[in-house]
Length: 207
Image (cartoon, rainbow, N blue to C red; front, side, top):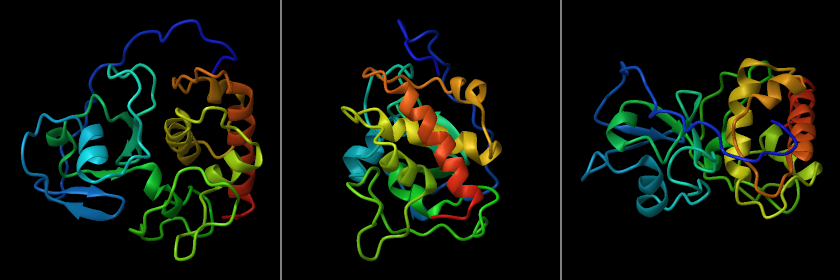
């Protein structure tokens, strides 16, 4: 993640998701099963936003270059604008609204069941609303480091960082720089600090 970027670079190909052993007639989103009807070629982004009203996932470029639409599919960061609903069927999708219920590897509650209570992406403080699960370490760190400027890309940044921390509990600058998501406001230094802070919170078992 360089401190400045002059172009989006190569557009990633459409996601190659291996066939699921799960029920391929359902779409599991944040722990809830959905049975989409209609055009299977609809991008997952629009199903999330227009059908389910999960608007934390943003439309940025529509060609998979910016990463504003990043979600996790079976734990892997994917561009929702490039992923047809029919490709995501049978897989587990996590959006920013469900991130708080997804523990990081190595935290005390890792392996816990995913809750279905929606959760906002970036809050005004570190106290979650009544009835909501505790904030994910990344959400807490984003608030502590005051990362967001315009904020539009930040949910995608957080989801990409969630994949990184799930596989690398102590990432360095080089690891973080491999995240391809773009920030037009140039908040890369704060993003880097927040990811490192989230890793520290996770190691300390703070949620």
